[in-house]
Length: 174
Image (tube, rainbow, N blue to C red; front, top):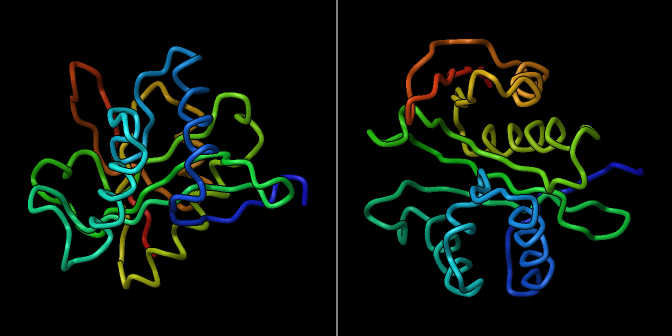
């Protein structure tokens, strides 16, 4: 029970906890919050919430985006946002090397198994969306994330260069 989480869609009710989550990343010098659908670049929570809500539907997705489900990973025992994770239903030319999913865990909650649980729960959502495979990119030196992906069935597929860094794509068959 101590580390049980549930994935929930962002709503206005999560605003203060979400802003605290973002502040913790920034406070640790992290300018990018992976899987956050630009929460790290959007000042207004309401603006970000509108964007992720619209992008979750094929009828309202931004023409430059793909249908994407975004979830907060919330710890059951205290309602704290532990992480954020997204599921991109398809890959366009821009996303082909970035994959179907991104995720992050707040700095104070890392190395407790949360990322593995988050990805495991996201795989269920991907199956419900009738996806057959999931591709996830990870920087080659990010061994913690590689372990998370492998624990969830990820198999190395290929490497590529992104912003002068080597990254790998892992494939998970659903």
